[in-house]
Amino acid sequence: MSEACYRMTNALGRAALRVLGIDTHTSGAEHLPTSGPVLMAATHVSYPDFLFLEKAAIERERYVRFMCRHDVWNVPGVRAAMDRMKHVPVDREAPAGAYLRARRLLREGEAVCAFPEAGISYSYTVRSLMRGVASLARETGAPVVPVALWGSQRIWSVGMPDEDGRKPRPSLDRGRRVDVVMGEPVTVKPGDDLTEWTRDLGRRMTSLLEGLQGLPHHRQRPGERATWHPAHLGGAAPSRREAEELDSVPRSAVPPTWGPVPLP
Image (cartoon, rainbow, N blue to C red; front, top):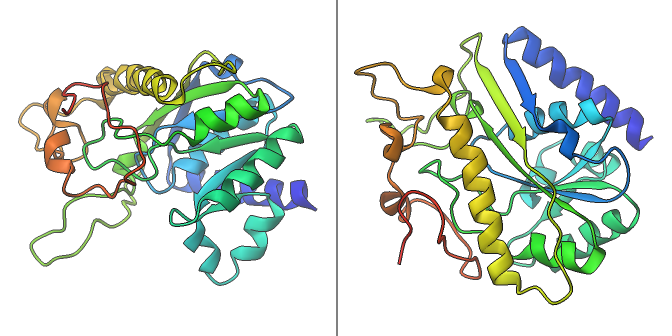
């Protein structure tokens, strides 16, 4: 029942991508094991990121169990489907339940995807990271595959409200390109410090993300005010310091020592 629901949802997602003419490219898929427990630690740049991450994972015949905001389960008709697909609701005010559920899935040999930034970064840089990925990997022995994606932020993401106070709406422009890259798997050893390991993960995720952001087809045109591109690469998105007032980051997160402008 779980996989049948997942296959049907995947089919609908792929149909939507075809209707919008979205061109998805994946590199590094060979780093995702075809069986056994694995944790994907992905950057988060748009609301529909899970569509592109699963499309990339299906190349390796993996159905990924995503750790998602718990309020998604409050949408009418969504709760049953999310439960059948074994996705994990995350309540940031009480995350223990999500941790235990993700740990059980990993012990059952599943692929689990976490967004360790705990939200979309307004600056489109890798913001503060939660230690949960490191803790799960150390406790279960599952390898961690760092993942970055770029291009989906132009479809539907966070952003500054317009002059009328309206938040950004989904773009129906056809022909967008989305790139997904998977890095080499890394493990957490029993004696590893979780904070230091998380900082290393931040550096790995940043390297993958900036590699995509620098691709020619993702650069803004000369003179374009690209609110969808990071400030340190010439875009008009909020800088990392400006994003501090916009990002909602848990206090327990590890602050960035990675990226273009590390904060003190």
